[in-house]
Structures are given as structure tokens and as C-alpha cells.
Image 1: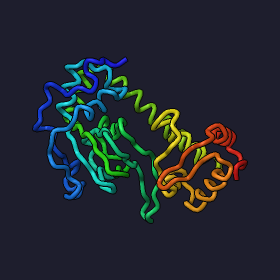
Image 2: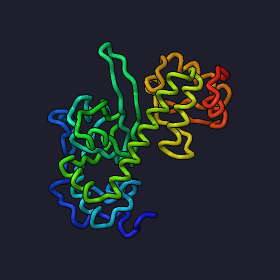
Image 3: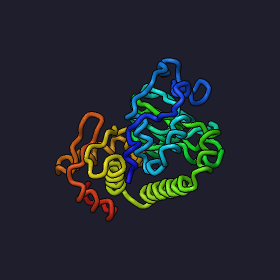
Image 4: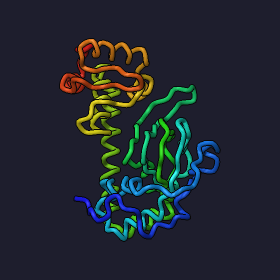
Length: 269
């Protein structure tokens, strides 16, 4: 499926002057989170090449995309973009995890998504040119590529197949959001939590079992208190459906969680 001639190879025409550290929005990233400009390995460029929306680009087009990519290393907790900021860049995660969230005036917050290595975000505001709809924060130490909208939009226009793939991406995002809204409105806690755990295991590593997430983070994702989440997870741990680790949840019995998610019943309390 991939053009192996280009997989994991450095871009032959990449301009090193464009590959240093970048501050996304004015002083958005604190000074101590800035990376020291340096060349980066071809394995990092492979993150873009392996992405399903870029893997079919011919080598020349991929080299062009690489020339637009600017590299940045961020510390955990660094703000990447804030809700309301101009949508002036597309961002790809190389390593680590980025949290997409919204917050209310009284300090409550909700996690909309966790973006892991090989995924991109910020495409909605980039494509329509309007403001960001959510906050993006480095949930762990992470590395990212940033592609400026002024360069990316003309590039997409020159690649009609890529434009169609971004339409597919937007549809996927819409379905994800629709599923989350349905869970919050229609499912009780066990069904909602089971759905979230299954979605996270399949999203970040199909067939994988370990989810690097805290109980506080998952409580913000499903809209329930941390205490309720902890009680439910401990009940499932006693049945060997999950295992609780420091900063992670391991799914041991996906079948039982899937039954709860589909039924939305109180069974499993």
C-alpha cells in the first residue's frame, strides 16, 4: 500500500532552515519548552509518510510537504493552541500525547480527544480558516510537526486525492463526536466508561490493551466524577475485566466491556 521507496527516508529536498523549533502562536509555548534547533531523524518524517492521508503521495509531493513541516519539542503541560486562537497551522504528533479539551468559566473541563503518535489535529480550523474550537495541550512530553496554513492550503489544492482524504477525516471526526454525545446522553456510567475504554484501545493501537490515561482524565472524558470512575474501575478489576496501573488502565476482558457498552445497562456496578 505504501511506496516503500519513500518510507522512512529523509526528504531529499527538505530545507534545513525550516526544520528548527517553532512557537505556534506568539508566546503560546513557554520559553523553557522550546526545542534547540537541530536536524531530526528520518524516522520522524516517516510519521508523516505512514499517515493514511499522506502515504499515497508521490515522492516529489511528499518532499514538498516535508519542506513545510517545522519541528517542535514540548514539555508536558505546554499549551499548543487555545480555543479562539487563529486556525493557522496543521499539527502532527510524532511522539507523546496531546489532549484536546474545552473548559467552562467555573473551571470545569471536558476532554474531547487524546491525539497520539502518527495522528494529526487542527484540520477543522485550518480548512475553514476560522478560530480554534478547543484547547490543545501537551499531555506528556511530546514532539510535533507544524505545517502553516498558508503553505498547506495551496498544497492540498494541488493534490485532489489528498483533499478527498481530508473530507474522510472530517467525517471520521464527526462520527467520533456523534458517538461521544450519544454516550453522554443515553448511556449510564458503566456503559459510558466501557465505550470510552474500548474506543481508546482501538484508536491508539488496534487490538492493544493498555491505555495511558489517568482516572481524572477519563472522568473528564465521560463526564463523571473521579470517585465514580474509581469505584467502577475497582469493581471491574475485582472481576478481572481491567487492571489498574499507575497512570494507565489495562483492558483484560474487552468482550464483557463491549457487552456493557452495547447494552448500556447497570450490570457491572
